[in-house]
Length: 147
View 1 (cartoon, one colour):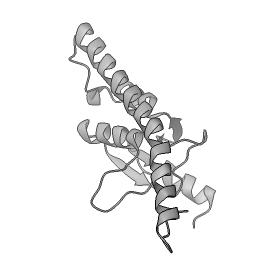
View 2: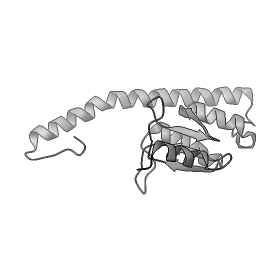
View 3: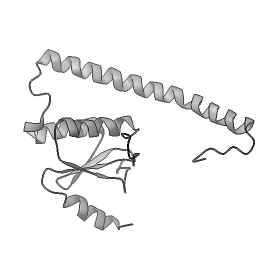
């Protein structure tokens, strides 16, 4: 594995206005299962912003994913990254033609979706663990990947 200094040099040399998206590895035929990684990568695709994916350091300085390196600087939080990129790359601002009312509606829908999705993930996690525990106790010799 390359050293942190080698990785930093690689990220900084990605090119002007090229985003290095740091996120978890994904399956070959599936998008990233993390909703925040999926959100940020989808934005990059919709806005046609050139990007490279780095999975060697998925967790950022604040211990969260995703995060980006843009023109040699690191940024955290998917929504902050999107807002920053739309500000720095004005021609890639996908919201520029929205009226104030439309922008407010879009923000409300985004927040409702994110909060609702996060709450459902948090609520579903104990149920998933409960089913895995049940599977382990009722299936002799059963093993659960990653446990």
